[in-house]
Length: 304
Length: 177
Image 1 (cartoon, rainbow over the protein chains, first blue to last red):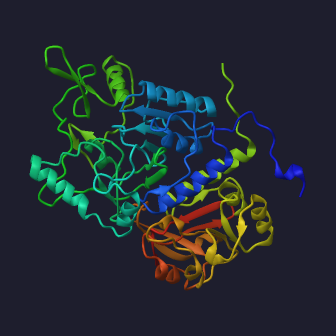
Image 2: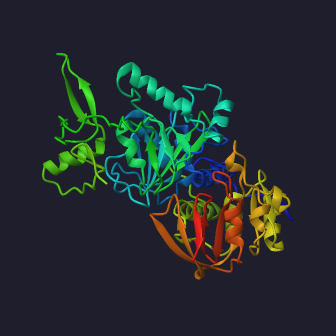
Image 3: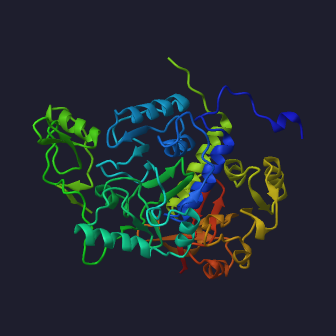
């Protein structure tokens, strides 16, 4: 053994920002998370040049998976052009030389904050969701050691009680985002704060979804063709947001998840939340030949 | 124009290896292409001094030793690189605990993919059911696996045939036809 064999050639910085040992650790943890869908796997969560809570978990997964041929798309609440999305996209492109895109159909790797694109993802695509709070039991059990024991026992009675109390108090389930969902019939996970609208898109999907919480140092995975069932009572069906009848004021797209924009006179207008779908709809309306993929929802109804 | 880092040969290889392993485990039964031959590339992509490794092959053990991983008995290993599967092996592996299912072992073994015993797979990652032929796996291994797996406890299996890999996570049900 020589000194030469123990060292590597000097590099100004590691490719993809993370060093090799950080990547190996994330790879090992990701494999275990794929094998046990929905189970929260702790990982080291290294420092990245961004404050924790701004997508560091998703960023570390993207930095591990990226190579110069990976086409990346970054979304923040559906939009490609918000500060958070633009900054993460710029960072990923700068540390990897990977091409970027706004089009969900072209992307190989989609890092997203709190939305799943409206166009159906393919089986070669990876969706990385940023997760602020990976523990679905936290509202009912703040002690994370006890919560882990509850996951080990599949003891989810308090989750049902929480939903029941909401129905008794308000007449319906008040959980707007991060709707607790049972993965592969065993682990309850939070799907990250995606709206209820997006949760059915993870059920038996063709793409791989990786959910990573950098601040909380845990990741979990929904592999392709895996059951993701929102917790519901038999007599109170799961309801997505009632956006089927809304029309986007800018693009004219109809039947997708909308952002509500309050107006001065107290009324409100709507814009399609998936900004690239809106852009493509406008370009098609103006006569360009734009490919819009099949969408999960048509006229506000889930197709499958 | 800012210059961006160029991946080293090592980075390119380990990235491609992990990509194959990730998709092999995400879609059990679909055979993926590794960038090179044999299990050495899996050592490069996954193993470092944080691991406890059991390695049967002496050449590969030298490579594992260079990564700084602790050489341990099969019972204590989080990664195992064996030269042949045996029916009693599943009973000797770490399966994780109820609190930490992720502490189950990862087993890498050679096999012949595409010929041999026919297996029917089902579970997460499989669209309905999938049939795949796997050779060089002794009789009794699959029943041994079946006996010790108590989901979510279990171990992951990568079968390597030259530059091809098949992944079988603990969540996959294997029926021998």
